[in-house]
Amino acid sequence: MPRFVAKLTIFTLIACSSFISLYTHPGGRALRPYPVVDTQGRRLASLFADISPDPRVVKSFPTFFPKPRACSASRSGLQGLSSQILNAIERPVYAQAGCGTSCAGQNMTGMNYPCGSGENCVSGNYLLVYEDIYDGVWYHGYMENGQWSCGNGCQCRNTICIMLGDPP
Amino acid sequence: MNFLKFFPRCIVAVGIMSGSMFAGEALSLNGTPAATLVDIRDRPVPKVQNGFVVSFNPLIADVWLFDESGNRVNNVRLSIPNASLVRVTDAAASPDGRIAILSSAATAEGQLAPFIAWMDSSGRLDKVVRTTPFVAHRIVFAKDGTLWAVGHLYNDQHSTDVPKHDVVWQFGSDGRMLRSLLPSNSFSHPFPSATSWLTASANTIAVYFERTSELVEIDSTSGKLLGRWTVPVPARSAGEIAGSVGGIALTSSGDVVMVISSEDEKRVARPGFFRFDRQSGTLIPLDTSKVAAYTMLLGADGDRLVLMGQDNGIFKFALADMK
Image (cartoon, rainbow over all chains, first blue to last red; front, top):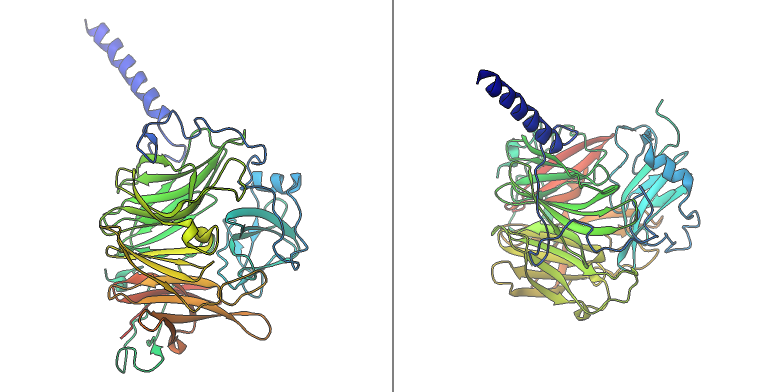
């Protein structure tokens, strides 16, 4: 009987630890099953249930909408998304950014700098990734060695400057 | 809430006003600011809601919540199974410390879903509400605990061809949509919510639509439209800085304060603080010479404005009285 209890205890511990690891976030915060519902409270199988893939959504790059387009002539530096930026986004990057007069001089551990409306994010030798809004939806794009003036024409949000390459 | 206690090492600026309320055409935001560094350089400008300071990182999809004592009471990070990308657009805090995170997620196959994640006050993910085909741009909690969102509909083609829809939605604490209002065809622009600002004081919701320069106030408990005004801000068009709004606050006494950029001769934006006078429909400039370093408006804490500024790369917070 004691041996059976011991085996049962071991089995229970293994089962519990498996369950815990199944619902534990890599960062350590415990996850638990949570419902995914629509705005009427109806349960959905998953967040992406019944949603068709959109080929324009680029893997691992924060673009949810069609390719970026310029909204003013001054933004001639705009180009389409490229594998270069995708690679930059997908691997750890070292970023420097700043709003106002300079992009350099502020080391960032993250990648995003909160440029306010009316401020400029000067990319210098960096890759400037921006979000812009036009016709009601957000567009994303990038420009190299240019200047994106937040609040100059279209709204600029979540502007980030990324230096291509590995961290120093 | 007493933001004097916010960020313990930070002595925020408290304005000691002189003169009568709104005497003349200018208000003075007085005080001798003293500030401290809070490193939020990798995060968008935070906002003040229901006694909390809310800060999020759109790329990492985490949200920080600070209480009135300056303690970070929540540090949540959103993780959605099967999503190759989660992007946070906005976040809101309820009076009891719950968090709503406005996000979009995409799979590697290109499936895209806008949603609102509801966290309880302990920071645990309570539920995920997919809002398809409504995509919100801003969210805010009213004092009654309901969540308000301003946004627009979209279609699978992501074209501008969408049916008439209400641009303001209210969600109950269970995540269900309670009501919607403000039809899109009541605006002169098909997507008025695209550049909008949303704030609340008690149970009054205020929405400012940059595209049409309209301010709308709604009673959260009844859904009644309290007023709709045209704010004399030049509607923005491509290539223009003038009229760009950088922040909005609704104080407990009902004052609407906005930061609006103008353009100098070199086409450099100059932010200015204004109070909107509903009766006259005019913007009254506020004299901010004593707090010139504070150009960002995070919101209101009661009758005070919570400001943020940057000095030699150091971010500072300030509390300013209006009397």
